[in-house]
Length: 443
Ligand SMILES: NC(=O)c1ccc[n+]([C@@H]2O[C@H](COP(=O)([O-])OP(=O)(O)OC[C@H]3O[C@@H](n4cnc5c(N)ncnc54)[C@H](OP(=O)(O)O)[C@@H]3O)[C@@H](O)[C@H]2O)c1
Image (cartoon, rainbow, N blue to C red; front, side, top):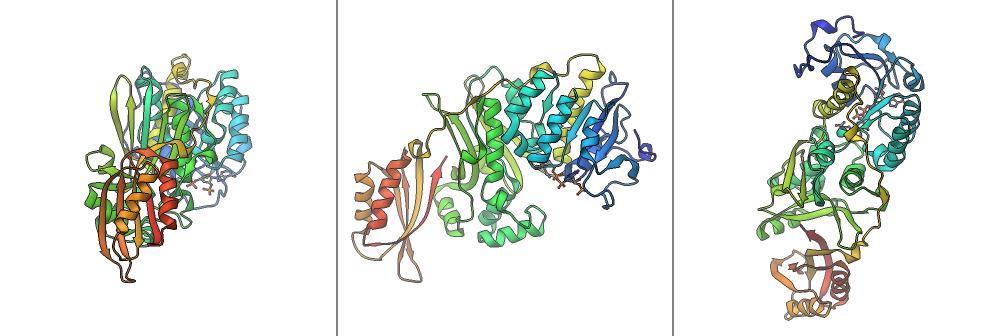
């Protein structure tokens, strides 16, 4: 290890390496921010994992690592990926473009790659996997989806004998924290977001999280592994959580549900991929309904195994470093034993997904709307739904709003989305309708 004081500071995890791992594997790392620092702390007392150089943007920045040898740092990431002694490049910089150039260069230089970069894998994964195949090196990316929760290797290896039927994930800790606070404290979205920002769970600009982009990258990566389908993350139907109100949360509770932001992917019988990101009502009996605060969970249905759920911390310094460090060890163990590093983790070629249009998906729906407070309104709503072939499971009149309108909540039976939209258009045009509040799907 190239740290003079490293021997005096214990590893925070106290994790021993396998005793069979004895000579060193030489690592070049790009990024020493939240995750990079965690990875460094895990390995700083492990002589088998030797950090040759770490690229950062600003080498003069104060770091959270005690007694860091500043000679380790470089502001030239290109030099790090072309260092002839380095065997593994650990990319923890983020972003898709420079990260891609660096990972391509690393592979072309014959180095294995470990990354936690969901955007990189979602946008360029198949191309990078093909290049890695040509150069006989591995790319491992366990940290890219759901931080510390093992899901990539379990999907690829442990569930490898299954045909995966469905994946439904709470894949973003920020939005799950916000929705949990709205549920438990009765807060508005804005109040809960402010609290999440104060606690460091949400960025100053929360768009990537609250509008569902982050979940889009992650569910696209999971589809690549589970279904061997390549999906452009920007082509995924995506809705965020900014329009959810405390009233919707309370209505859902009365009906026996909680509201969660879900990344959903399943294959249709005719070979198309139904993939989307949006808030959903989750029944109280479903395991995902109990996933609170910043925790993540991925619910997987396999044809042999049935239902499986993976639960844990989906982000943060040490949880994410746990996943990245395990990938490094998996490669290191192969290198040190003179074996191919985990050939079973070669990612199979994937085909471009044929996406099922969201209008053809089948869901139950929750609809909240405000109507004029007058007789026969419920009957008119029933007619609009009936004409579109939408059957209602329940109708609740929630009382009179301060402006004199009546708040009404409908829960439908399972129906195609374009039929629901047809009913919604008819309801919107009814003279008695004041405004449509919120339409949500039910898991
Ligand atoms: N944070 C999490 O909980 C989490 C969870 C799962 C996955 N991830 C993924 O892990 C990756 C890293 O995330 P993070 O939270 O650790 O990010 P971060 O804290 O912002 O750290 C990024 C690091 O990259 C360095 N960097 C940025 N641009 C660079 C450049 N042009 N050349 C060299 N170094 C450069 C930065 O240098 P300076 O330190 O000098 O600024 C910093 O050390 C991302 O892909 C992210 O999506 C993060």
